[in-house]
Length: 463
Ligand code: HEC
Ligand code: HEC
Image 1: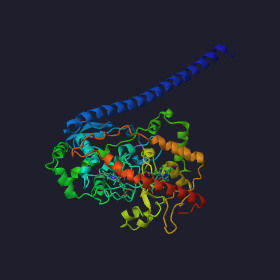
Image 2: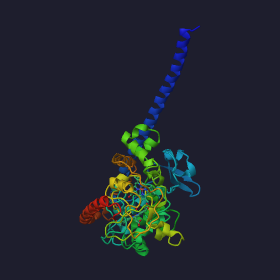
Image 3: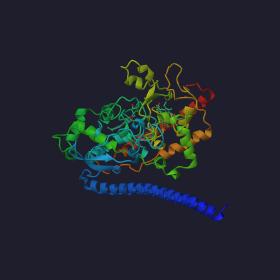
């Protein structure tokens, strides 16, 4: 016999079960959101506190190196180094993935990275990075071309060095360089220490010599003291300490707390519908962007030949073919460049090794214009197989650009020193006047690009 009361009891019980599940889901969602928010505000207030402490420290030209790690790092005793060192702590470290590389979904692990420097080494590196004393005539620092407020790049198609002329390529961002194993667009350096010697001693960049750099540092009482604090176990100041401190500072430039990251860690509301749509196009096997720009770093740390154009009048840049010239198959890498990270990409226009594209939409259009659309006729390039004919709609391209905007996170921006041990003025002002002159040139090249794009639209093979 059918009993109404039994039915009610069963219904009520199952409904009760669903209700509990629903409530617990709501709670866990809320606590994830709260945790993320707390994390963010903690970072910000930590950053503010540190900024204040550093200003106090620098007043009076007495320089002390920080005893604290930058935010996102923890001070931990290292047996190997017999001292306290800064180790990165990040939520991605809780995720596993195939080969520990960024293959797979949003919750994938990070590749190996550099850390384990002391707080003093990182802080010394910060002074060195901003100090024009490192250049031949005290006119230009690393920060001239890698400016913190420009995504650690400059806003030039190609950087301007000590001679006032443009160098061969565009300045890449330095955010997350700790995770890279190759440096420069053509991958010609394999460590940050090796990389630093490039700009320091290049006649077109900082124009210095190892001898002169040593002399300037040794003649500076502040630096002698600071190097002693950063490398207490070593007897005297050496060039390798300079490279080491610069590497320490650059390895602390971590950008992994963008809105995209909050989304990746489970906070669905961090992105808008359009941005999620953009992420989906980006990861799709139609656009294939994520095959090379793999999350979470948005690079797979490899070299790819994609056939981007040079600025008008420039000879073809063979890229990685030169780096690997001794290998049998170096020809395969003709026109190959390192896949750049897309972190903070909205901050680092113009784009590509040659700074050829002024904005992100033009950059995405390059991929959509079809395989080999910009390859000069006299060049035979082995384009990467993921470079295809995606045929994206205007909406899809716009959504990719929206999505790329969610990769911005500068919450761990280091403090720009108010005073430098060399007593030289902060470099950015000097460089800005240089730029003032060159901005005219930049505008010219912008117009040049525009008319070129027009030509390209008429004739898709025309480069
Ligand atoms: C004149 C401008 C200029 C100065 C000064 C300069 N750089 Fe660069 N930097 C560049 C350019 C341009 C590139 C790319 C060059 C290439 O790939 O051939 C680059 C590349 C790099 C890279 C490689 C990044 C990557 O993703 O491969 C690092 C790291 C770097 N610079 C750090 C430094 C440091 C440290 C200093 C100071 C010692 C410095 N730079 C000074 C313009 C500059
Ligand atoms: C086959 C690998 C590959 C694929 C697929 C790929 N890229 Fe790239 N991407 C690169 C390489 C290599 C560069 C640098 C090329 C150069 O400078 O000439 C680059 C450069 C860029 C840049 C400029 C970065 C900078 O710092 O200047 C952006 C933006 C970009 N890609 C977005 C995308 C988007 C969006 C897609 C999908 C439509 C995509 N990429 C697909 C390899 C790839």
